[in-house]
Length: 473
Image 1: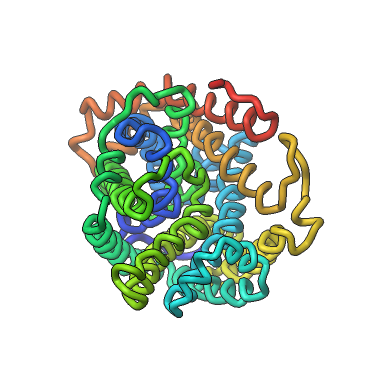
Image 2: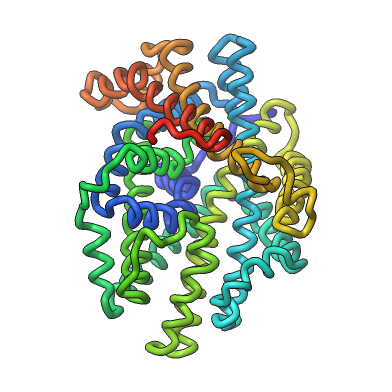
């Protein structure tokens, strides 16, 4: 790509953009449900430990590689490795992964937008009907909503880093925080809400098992967008004076704070709606919670705050989740866009148009794989079940390859780039990092237990997803 590389205009712009990539559906719904099903406060504690003890060093690895090379993931791997073929493959994986994740994330974002429209229209009774979701995702209306979501993503990304991504993050992220806090305050005033707070915050250490620990670590890794190439790409937009270690800490703190606060919204709401709820009965799926369970809660609110009040709360919730989904989708899709611009020297508009066209086709095919088209619905079979095209994309690129990409970046910075060069890159713009305990911890952790843990996660994911065998019993 000709000309000077784009840069974030401010430190807060980078932090909000990076936090926007991390804060998504998993934070707002998946994390609270995971905490509810896995010991409440004990899950929270483990999640926080994993974020800062394991995920933060991986964040530093990705961001420092991007800033040093000032290129997309493929270019960064190629330049630092001296064009080694096997590391170019790692670069290609870091580009293909976010592109394919953007496909299924687009589908989910479209569903959220559709439910937002219905909530604003006041159709709470219809949304709360258990049959509505399956009918909706197989309707032609989905494609009209997809056109709107594509337009929003295009408008943000065509503005570039400073005028598009950073500007949108500065608007959407504060709005997201305000809406989240507003919903928390509202929920905590409901009857029996404190029972949900108590369950959420008081640890039940008897529930700590190997699968729960694995779940907390996986949630932490996925929620910070590690392994997607996003932080390599965003790191390449940082200037040499930026303090990478402190910026990474702030992103991790922001992401964790949002996840924690979301728990104060979801769990009290569930306990208020059903005081006798058994958390083990909650859906494992964020999608199930958003589109089937929570609409029932919004409908039940009509008895206490009226039709318009319940519609307003539902609308606010879906707007909150939509903002979170959009910020994540923009960040995810920026990775292949930046790569095409860097590698082929094309304009941003051309990259957006070409890659966007392919993504829309794949997203449309995925949207048709829920019963509309049998071939796409029963695309392949593994682990004793038929899998749709949507399932395959999710299983392969989100669940399986992400931890592998995280493992590869750890090995790359320590054993290919060499830890001396890695530490020197981190020290640039961060004088306090030099010789600190944090520097020593990052150095030791990335060359010892973090790669081992990520390798175990990868192997266990493959065993569970495709062979129905768990390393953890």
